[in-house]
Image 1 (cartoon, helix red, strand yellow):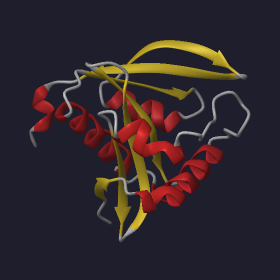
Image 2 (cartoon, one colour):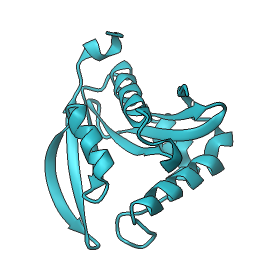
Image 3 (cartoon, helix red, strand yellow):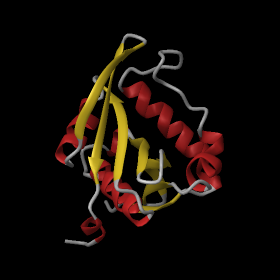
Image 4 (tube, one colour):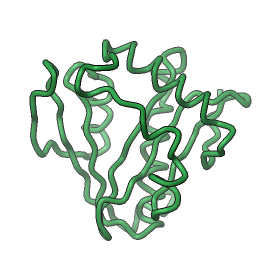
Length: 162
């Protein structure tokens, strides 16, 4: 199975919102827990695309199975948001492929670092970030969950296919 990564289109909205909800339910996150939110989805154009960031989706055979966004924090840093892979398509390298594509896109957009957060119970995400060279910045208790904040410094060399 080949993952094809492309830029988000408005017609993807319902699909990525469903993907988001499926992925969070899979790790026990629910609306109202203080961590879960989805109010940015109807505003992807405004929050991610129009302000110098990006939002990517990954497809297998025309089906959206992965996604992730970059939201500018300041001129040098972007927040990596919404990195999700459908549970039926996990453990195939698609999360790493999306993360690498987002990091490369951040470099293309002129960012020097990326930041993000995940929860302690999202073990696959934590392992992925660690494998890709992210470092933990801090932890915080939010609504009974431990949120872990991390970052990665980006190098222009990331644009090259090695």
